[in-house]
Image 1: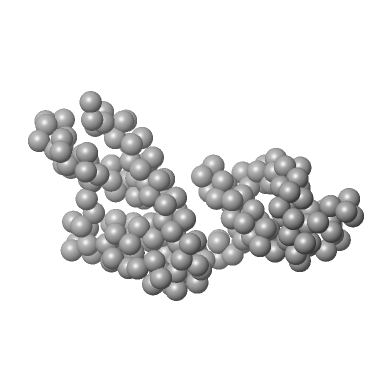
Image 2 (image 1 turned 135 degrees about the vertical axis):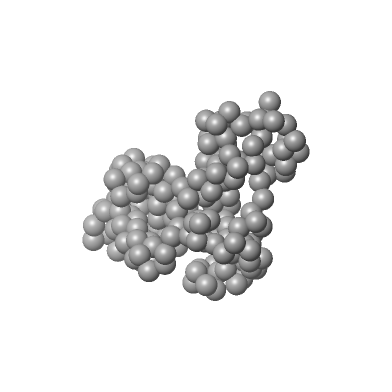
Length: 193
């Protein structure tokens, strides 16, 4: 174990991957207890994995790697919860009327709008409901990028993180929004045929 620990401290990728394989199931179980949804649990695991890799040289071996990784994940989760409490949830209802009309349905939805089954009011309701199901940080990112046309650099400065982290989170936000929207449109029988 001391040999593996030395390799870890040197930033050896294979040693890190070996440790990750050993403790990943434990980390995932804990993330599922911390997060309200599987998507957020997955985000917790991914973010903690990245943070563990970036801090692996600081790992002293006073506890098991799994315990150390859990602590990183739990600290990140606590920080995230604090930020959520400080920043109010963003919803479409809270947007000013002039900003609301800027949210457009996907391109494939626009082309089918003339068909009877595409009731604009129902589609708007699905868009708003899908948006409301997003975590606050995801909703804020979408609003900043799509409605306020902020650059990635401006968004990163506001969130006190890297541009790459903003890109990654925005990708996840759009993906989750798309999944929620498709699910809601399917429930309302509004999916394109």
